[in-house]
Structures are given as C-alpha cells and as structure tokens.
Length: 158
Ligand code: ROI
Image (tube, rainbow, N blue to C red):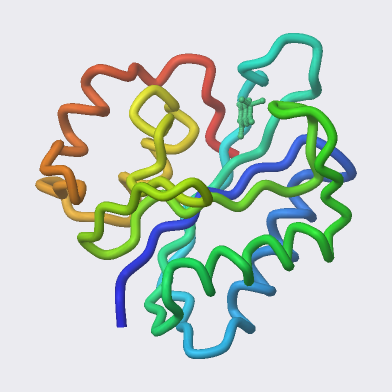
C-alpha cells in the first residue's frame, strides 16, 4: 500500500456537492482506503473570469499503481460531468495526484509531485492538515518551507 494525496477542485454545479460526491467515489475505489480528508477551502480562480473554486485534499492508502489510480480518478471526473475543453477552463471536478508515496514520476500522463502544488495555497494548506509538521515531499522539499513561501492569501476555510 502506498499513501497518496489527491487534490480535489470544483468551480461549477455546486462545488461543495461535487467534492462530497468525489470523496464518496474515492471511498469506493478498489484496493484503496480513504484515510482522511481536509476541510474545504474557497478561493478565487487563478484564471480570471471564472467562478470561485472549492478545493480540498484527500489521503488514500492504495494498492493501485499510479496509472491505474489516474485512470480511476479520470473515470470519477467523467462520471461527474467533467468536459475537457480548454486547458485551465472551469470544471465540475478536478482530481490531481499530488503525491504518490515517495515516488518521483515524470511521464507524459503523470508528473508527481504535482507540478504546480508549491505555488498553490489551496493545495498546500489542506495538505498540511493531513501530514505531520516535518513532512517532506518525495523530492525532499519540506512542506513547512513551501507553506512559508506561499502565504495563506485569498483562501477561505469553509
Ligand atoms: N484556482 C483555484 N482557486 N483552485 C483550483 O483548483 C484551480 N484550478 C485551476 C485553475 C484554473 C488554474 N485555477 C484554480 O485549474
């Protein structure tokens, strides 16, 4: 089993409900235990002109291989009406593999640790709820340092 952290985001069709149903779907994944979920956080979209996002992070213990997990997450996104039109467009549900055990993954379909997480307070602060204060990412960066470089600005804990 590997401990995996998933970032959840939604800014369409009742975002909090989208996150709740996604968490239920994560709970149902085969060979996987949902270990914990963070609080929900609301923030402005990083791309202007979109509705606000609701974000959260979930911790899973899973025996699914990274790409099998990615397939499962994309199936949950599709089941909740995700349409892949423009990159960075508004979405009913976004599920990102942030961290997969202590693995570094860099293939076209999947980069872990997730590329943008260090700059995103709506990922780092919910993640911080689920890990010890001295937590290190697989690339040895400390979460405490990433948090120090990414102020809690514009985030609203729901
Ligand atoms: N902005 C916020 N606040 N939360 C997100 O999850 C999010 N996801 C995105 C973009 C459009 C970059 N902005 C976001 O993909």
